[in-house]
Amino acid sequence: MIPRYNRPKIAKIWTLENKFKIWTEIEILIAEKLSVIGIIPKIAAKEIRKKAKFNVNEINELEKQTRHDVNAYIDNVSKYIDKHSKYFHHGITSSDIIDTGFSIQLKQTGEIICKELKTLLKNLKSKSLKYKNTAMIGRSHGIHAEPITFGLKLGSFYNEFKRNLKRLEFAIEEISICSISGPVGTYDSIDPRVEKYVASKLKLKSEDVSTQIIPRDRHAFFFSVLGIIASSIERFAVEIRHLQRTELLEVEEKFNPKQKGSSAMPHKRNPVLSENLTGLSRYIRSAVIPSMENVVLWHERDISHSSVERIMAPDICIAMDFSLSRLNEIVTTMKVYPENMKKNLSLLGGLHNSQKILLKLTKKGLSRQEAYLIVQKNAMEAWNNKRNFYDVLKTDNKLLKYLSKEELKNILEIDTNNSKIDWIFKNKIK
Image: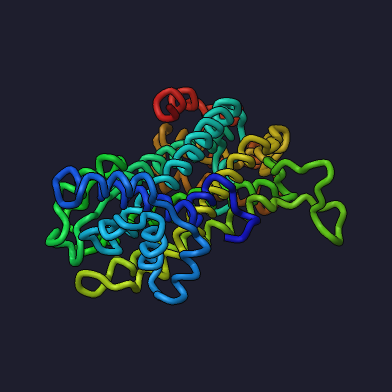
């Protein structure tokens, strides 16, 4: 991942240094259990624990010769272990180390992303409560519908990200897998007790049935969940982008004193953070299809998934971490303009109350179809000629047969649109 989106904690997980450190711990644990069950000498396990180390640069040089990263790694560590090195990587195959190590990296990554999601939930809930009763127009198809509150809008995102957190926690559990089963997964050259021991020490679960590798449906699920989270991030970002449009200006990203919006137009204040999140979300979702295609491998294994994962896993995980951090920044620093929300709410002269009139007419005995046509006729008159809705309604003699001018006025003035806000927050935004 380019430095622009690279945050230190998560970037460190995907370094070669960390990968080989994880591999070394797995190898040491394997040797420990092998010595306990009498497969290798106890002194060998102690020496492996004491002396096992690696040098990334040396491994890279060795790989140029071996064209096999795990063999290069084994040769390098064996040099430091010296005479007991024949017991290092005993009875196992490359995938046992690679896949179990990959599980740990994904778990470490997932835990960081979970933490960021929990921070986001805290921030969303706080803002949602703050603006619980801040009225604004709700929109469907981008067109004025009926009033909602900005707090309710944020409450929708809060619950969506709660679901995302649950999905990710399940995906982390799904990917926290240890597989130490030897060539083609038969345990023919390695005792199953070794896998159980390593899994326990690393806080992983043993694979149900490996095929020499950990089946990639687990990884596909993990990256699919990241794809869903990315879509939720983009949904929020698109909302900010819409609400920040000059014609609306109901919400705005924070604009720093020395920030510049355009190289040509000094007046510009663009929603660049949200636009950036839209782009990053597209990128994160791009991993979903390759991760699913990685499920399909030849027989007990091939390495067609390997090159994809080497590129995809670090970059997508790093991009997700950055995106959630940026989204938290937007949520905590965004500027909200209740006065503009109020102005936009009144923009169509009360047309958002059309359903109130419709329902009242049905209570007066009209069929829904008759009532709809009466209200729509008046609504279109108000819309097309930019007139106040009440001023149009009070001149419709057909309508006045059922509702007096005083009744009309009362219906339009009584604010019932958001009467259930307290109930929603009490029962649904927890």
